[in-house]
Amino acid sequence: MDNTRHIPDRDDDIDGYEKIDRYNPDLIDSLKGHYHEVLKLIGEHPGREGLLKTPERMAKAMLYLTHGYDLNAEEILKSAMFKEDYSQMVVVKDIEVYSMCEHHMLPFLGKAHVAYIPNGYVVGLSKIPRIVDVFARRLQVQERLTNEIRDCIQQTLNPIGVGVVIECRHMCMSMRGVQKQNSVTTTSAFTGAFLQDKTRTEFLNLISSRLS
Image (tube, rainbow, N blue to C red; front, side, top):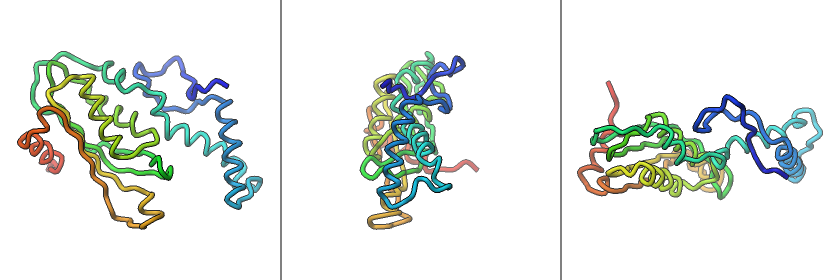
């Protein structure tokens, strides 16, 4: 079976970050069968009216929620790299994060804050949220997600430093287990200049501030 998940259109964006609404029909059929069995095993009746299309919807939803496996974050950054004589901090904050915990396959969601100090190259600002999404749209743990974003920017742009902070609520904590609805998990990862207290503090102050 061809495991290609997304069937590309001629008008797809150059960086591959289009809305995914066409799927490999063989893969959908295979996933539908598994979800049909899951519904039966939990005590439901897949033949009842409300669930007739649920296995297909679940299959398409899962492929969309994990479509980051089909994208190359490095190529997305390279598609919009520009030479620029700018060496101050660039911060993109409050980037929405939606991901799936690999332990329970339940969502975790929140915000990412990303900064880098250019070293001869800048990148189109929209590409930073896009690479966050590339890594978030996979089965994840928040700690690895934070490191992957940091490492991709560092290895691709070779900046003077990179800073990443992610704040998320995890449904595996809110809906099951300890059932703590208001707990927030914060992770951070730094390279280069951001390992210095002064630079890191500037970054943390910037992401904490709000424009009037």
